[in-house]
Length: 222
Length: 388
Image (cartoon, rainbow over all chains, first blue to last red; front, side, top):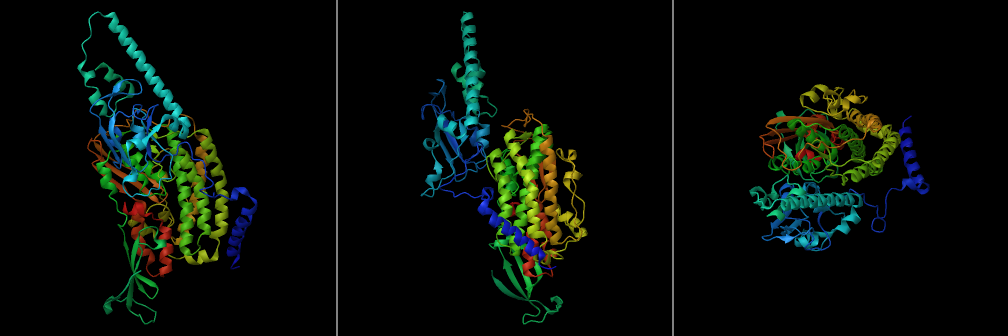
């Protein structure tokens, strides 16, 4: 009979309509500004720079420019410093004089996070970013990008714990290596001449493929 | 819409049975690019005689953004997030097609768990793409809101899964050469299982709501018929080709990934009309649910990425490769030529919705303007992929 299909369809609509008054799981929307769905652990939005303890001296970034090179829309702008400052482990390192991210260009792909050998750049979860200015407000400077490790722990708890373990292991390995080197130097009476490959290492930190223990320990020898 | 009167020479006049004041004169109407049912910025120049379409010229390029040239100037890894933006409904399958072609180019092995995750995510993508397509198609037909909202309710469950795994609902950027970026934990797999188990309920409800509806049948049956010969000659792939009765599915033909391990059937249509294309999506969703159930039952713990693949300074050897998969819209392929450098020498995309769109005029001739929208909806295009 013509019309039964339409009536059946209407019964489905009526079931959903009436059901939404009785069954909680049929109500799938939330009233956004008052009510919020918790963001998943892996949620990503825009990059931030992580520092330990001090926002200026504790910045993990050593201006190796790998993220600038690998960034698909080329939205990261880095100027490397001329001098070196002690980093969070007390070793002299280059630091970014300028570190800007144009988040109006950034496409939140997380590739900068994946390629960073120093665990310095991570993804934020803040998505309410409306600004009054058109141009400068969305070009984030180093000061606005810098976030503490505690903040990182708050937004990505599982990931941050794993990162901290890795960094502690790398630091312990570097410490052990240094101790072994010191012991070897103490055993030999004549001082060892510096190896030319290790002295040029700080300049070569921008070479992709550099691993954290090598590149972070090499400046101490020079 | 802009309208101009175009007069044809008497010899050019198509035969007509209609008597009207515009007899013999074609009214050229430009539909789009801001028309709500053109699925983005797609424009059609339609020459009408009364309400009957006599000529149709698709115009595209409004969303062109140089995808292939960007791919040739960016490193292999940098192109991965750009592939999300091709067909922004199915970023997981786009990622997979690109990763597959790079893996062919460089001869990279993929761990088994990563293959399972890829199948699970690709089939979930197919579910959400087909569900939203049915909603959009009915919305084009005039069933405003309700079917689309029901479809989006289910789609949102799947997008939540994508978000909790990859970090983004639509721009997933999840696959990597030689595996996947992050591993899925047991809680995620449990959630996926629950959604897959509940999905047939939605399918039954949707079929009851729509597919027996007399108005839908009247609007879609015998509308926009595509013959198998034309479909093969024009290179049509995907559900649109199978709706004509041609048994061609890259999952079966190529057996890429681990698809040969799963038992599933390929639904085929008889008439190649809009109703068959609509039903094809509904039936494919049932088969996808079957594949998902098998994959979720078989998945074993293990590594998700090949540790030998370098993330930074990735350089495949000199050569060329074409990797293709059965995307939700058809055969999606990436053709890459490497000269040994960090970026491809040539980067070419074979977008299914662009090639499926080429037969639009043949489908629409002789039908009314209202049918053009339904036919366009059943072709299943996404302008991000058509224009690239």
